Image 1 (cartoon, rainbow, N blue to C red):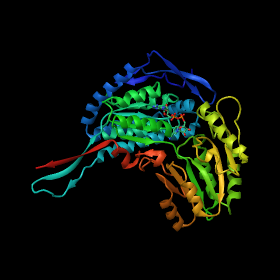
Image 2: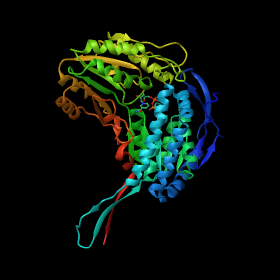
Image 3: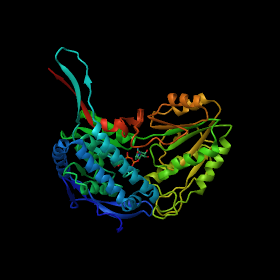
Length: 477
Ligand code: NAD
C-alpha cells in the first residue's frame, strides 16, 4: 500500500462505503505493483446510488444556478489547493509525470469554474407573435440524473467535463470512473463534498463495467448517458442507450492526421508536435497519430522528431527528472508491441525507440517510424501509445484523401505558412476539431467532440452544458 494513495471507497448518497463482497487491485504502472484495493459495487449498491441520484436531483435542480455555481467554484478552489496531493495520486495510479498530472488537476478546476458560470446562462428564447393573444417561448430544464463512464487516460479531466456540465445544468450524476484510476475521481468527489454539495448529487461506483453500465442505463431514474472511451465500448453503450431511449454523448477514439505542407517550418513545429504526441505517453484521444509530411521537408522533419524522441527521459512520473511516464497498463504494452511488430514486418525503418524500456512497469520508448506501408495496422488502428508513423507526400490532394480515409473523426491538424491553404484544409478535413498551425483544441470554453466512429455530441463550450438541458416550448394564452 502507498501512503500517498487514498483508501478507495464508493460514494453513495453522501456516504463513503468501503464494505463490499468483492475487491480489486489498483496497480502503479511505473512498478507493476498493487497500491491499494478498492471495493466493487454490488447490484444493491447500484440501486442505492440510483435512489440517491433521484433524490439528489430534486434538491439540486431547485437551487438557483448561482447557488449551484458557488458550490462548484468551492470544489474547484479545493482542487487547486490540493493540487500537489491529488496529482501524486493521479501519477501513482496512471503513470503520467507529476507536472502533467498537476496541469490536469488545474484544467479540471478550470472546467468546473467555467461550467459553473455557463450554468447561469441557460437562456430560453421568445418567439415573436404567431397566434393572436398567445405568447410562445422556450425554457430549458435539466435532463435529469446522468450515468457517466470515464476512462483511465485522464482520470481528472474526463470526470470534470461530465460532472461540471451535468451539475451546472442542474442534473445529478452517478459516475463510474475507470477501475484502474479511481483515486483521482474520489478526490474530486471529496472536494465537492467539502464544498457543501448536497447528498446524492454526485455518486461514485466502481466494479464490473458491463454489469454497472447495463444496470444504470436500464434504470428509469437515468435520463442521459455519457461515455468517454473506446469506439467498441461506445457502440455497446449506445446500443443500450437506444434500447432504453436515453440520449447520449459519446467521446470515442480518434486517429488524428497531421498534414505538414511544404511551406511549414519543420524547425518550428516539431517541438509542439512532439509535446502533443508524447504527452501522457501518447495515450490521448486527440494526440497526433498519422503524420503526412511533404517530401521536400520530410528528411529534416524526421531527423528532428527522432532527436526529440531520443531526448525524452523515461521514468516513474513521481521522479522530477522524468519527461515521459509508463504506459498505463499491460494491455497497452501488448497493443503497442503488436503495432510496431507489424510495421517492421512490412519493412518500416525505426528511427528512434521501437521497443520496451526495462522489465519493470509498462515503459515503452518514444518511437519514430518511416518507410511505413500505408496498409500497416497502425494507419487504421488508434495507437494510443508513443509511436509516430511518418509518411511523405507530393500531392496535397492525396494527403487530404489519406487524412479523411478513416471512419474516425476526432481531432486533425495541419501546418502551413499559407492563409489560403489554412482555410481550405480547415474546411476539407473531416473531424470534430481541426488545429491549423496549433494543437490547442481542448479548453473549457471550446466544444470538444468527434464525428463518425469518434462519437457524437460535444463536451466543453456552451454545447457541453447545453447537452444536459431539455428544451421546452411554452405557449401561453
Ligand atoms: P475500454 O474502452 O475498454 O475502456 C475505457 C473505459 O471504459 C474504462 O474506464 C472501462 O472501465 C470502461 N468500460 C469498459 N467496458 C465498459 C462497459 N461495458 N460499460 C461501461 N464502461 C466500460 O478501453 P481500454 O481497453 O482501456 O483501452 C482500449 C482502447 O480504448 C485504447 O487503445 C484507446 O484506443 C481507447 N480509449 C480511448 C479513450 C478516449 O479518451 N477516447 C480513453 C481510453 C481508451
